[in-house]
Image (cartoon, rainbow, N blue to C red; front, side, top):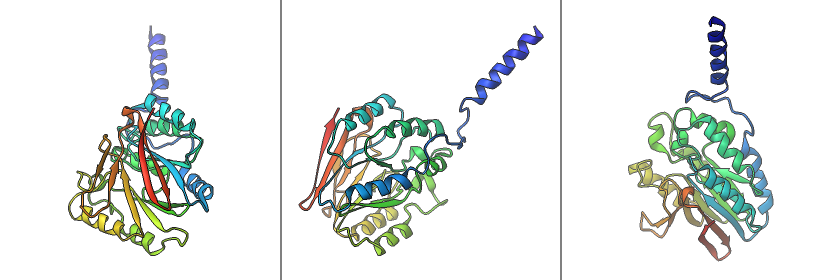
Amino acid sequence: MKRLYILLFVALCTVACQSEYHAYDTDVDGAKAIHAQNIPAIEEACRGKQSIRFAFLSDTQRWYDETKDAVRALNERDDIDFVIHGGDMTDWGLRDEFERQRDMLQGLKVPYVVLLGNHDCLATGAMVYRTIFGAAHFAFTAGRVRFVAANTNALEYRVEAPVPDFDFLEQELAHYPAEADCTVALMHAAPHTEQLYGEKADRYHATMKSFPNLLVAIHGHGHSYEIREPFEDGLKYIQADCIEKRNYLLFTINEEGYTHEQVFY
């Protein structure tokens, strides 16, 4: 009987060691530093293009089947240059959640980038995100369009870090690339949400409006498709559905401006 108890104890320990049993596991398996590879791939694929097309999906969280089907639907197209994920890959910021979602997105035929969502900041999620993707603030140029992605999850950081990072945004503005002549703002949570409000929201919007020919701001977080003009100054903030609703946004940007549509799958 004693031998049986010992064997059961060893078996339970083995299972526990193979499982993610706490919220602070940051030992990432699989692909890392994805933006360092995918951003140059996007820029090279779009170099010299006057017209680009990209898909924007968001808030995949616990909807793994819907995310897998989205990847399949996107791969059936041959007219998309890249994909942007608007953040909240995870519900609880767990390493396992990040890895499962990442592995599905790795199946895309085109390069992709992922924004940091507020759920992704839970526990040690921001550290896992940094390992898998890179910095939470980043920018890239696709053809003639400069995409500026900012971490707007200010509520999650409080005083621990400058969110949004206005130094980053001002540096991006000061070193705006010569090949770009228009800008798209990317974020997870828009101004006037619980994540970004008050003076920070006003300053973020004013800073982004300083960028050359700011076309549109695109985000997730609200789990419903919506077009708003929160500052009543002509700039539209377009919010994507969560992936549970089985659709993504398809944007086309050319010399005439931009168009977008919801695509259901």
